[in-house]
Image 1: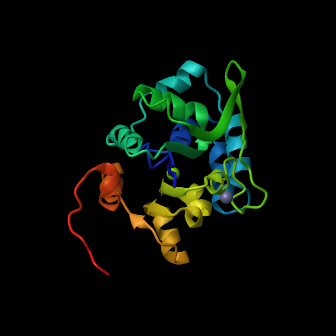
Image 2: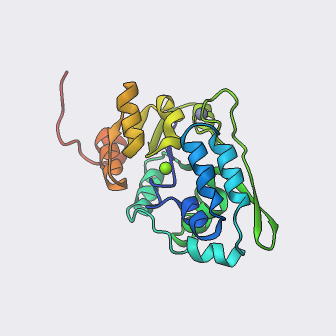
Image 3: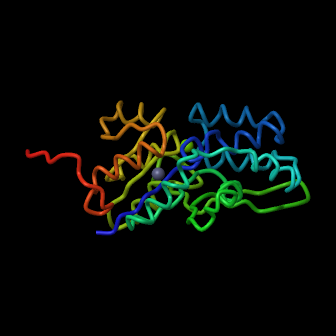
Length: 225
Ligand SMILES: [Mg+2]
Ligand SMILES: [Zn+2]
């Protein structure tokens, strides 16, 4: 049975929300009005992000300068190598922006990882257009990248690591769900089983304990049920 690890990006791999960081520096203040419309459920995240991206007024080098200061979980590169070692390919899945994610991962030599995210197109010297490839009309998230779609397409064991609202629709689709922050609260409310975690060191140690035969680590103890 093939195993695949899907990781959310903002708040899970990166410590801060990348798009919010970009908008707060370069978008007209209207971006917060759009954000509030999404928070209240009036619009889906696809429309929200499309409108916010259109509000950016910045050159590519200006965007890069901010992206190059975004920090990620320091354990994540080691976790990516761990996934490779146990034969569980890792996919980054985000309702954020592919260019932002790739730029940040590149700095950590992780740009070989597959990324499923909204696509950024340069529309002018200082303007951009966002495209969504995984919108699902069947899902209430109305997201540019509806995570439940690509995850459901994986025919095998689905491990998911996430932290927030963009992960809600995928929570029930994962075989093994690692959750923190509002995703954990959502799971508690809906009785969706999950494993709490703080960072990728936690995720790795749980997976190591659950798969001693794959990772080569000796099991701490045998539990007989
Ligand atoms: Mg997130
Ligand atoms: Zn969905």
